[in-house]
Length: 73
Image: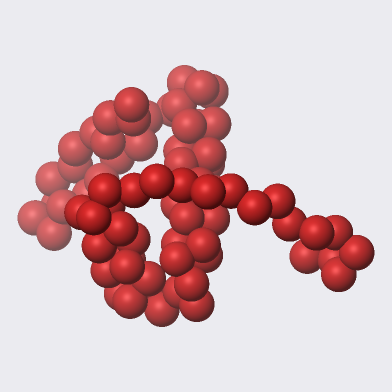
């Protein structure tokens, strides 16, 4: 990010359970901050949604080799 551009601040109310999920994701993904987890999640969701809008299907391959569709809300 350019030093001339001030990032927008965004206040987000989370349940304790949601905050714990973000904190856990920060730990397991080695993210530097909770904000980084949210930015990564947004980028991932955006990518998946774009594929869905182009008619794609998002699949998860299980360790067994079986695949299942990831349904996006």
